Image 1 (cartoon, rainbow, N blue to C red):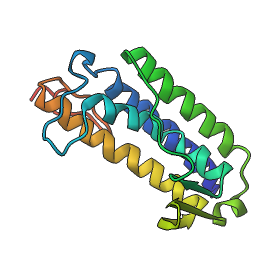
Image 2 (image 1 turned 90 degrees about the horizontal axis):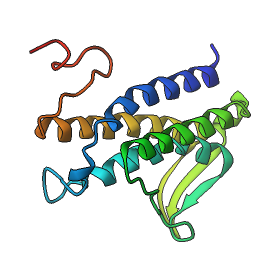
Image 3 (image 1 turned 180 degrees about the vertical axis):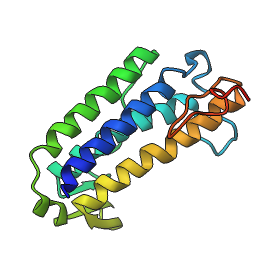
Image 4 (image 1 turned 120 degrees about the vertical axis):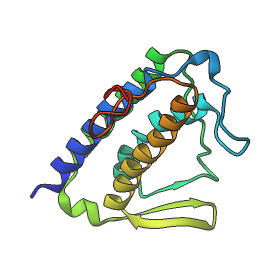
Length: 165
């Protein structure tokens, strides 16, 4: 079993599915959110596209310290730019995964803000977290689209919209 090849395949598959969702973002409703505690739609979509860069981040660094590297999300003004952002980030992560040995997956990685440690994990762990976060936030985005009565694509099989329910 080659773990790195499996991670690359999973990232490629999750990206292909996610791009279908990002193509549906109605930019005229970029600031829409279903609840006051929810992210705005474009912020959520941009975050999802940014998450595809996290495998590379986890491979090429030992930590992310928000005190020294604050989060500055990329900007997208249309669906094409949003899709291009995710495609670029995914390709860079896939390229970075190709440089990795399986032994490297066990090396430590830390998420912090200064002295406050948010998470300690392995490089494998941060890659898994990024893949899980893409899936998690894509599901959130699916709810946003559903609430706006925009038919959603299937993720791991057909959606209710594709089955004609």
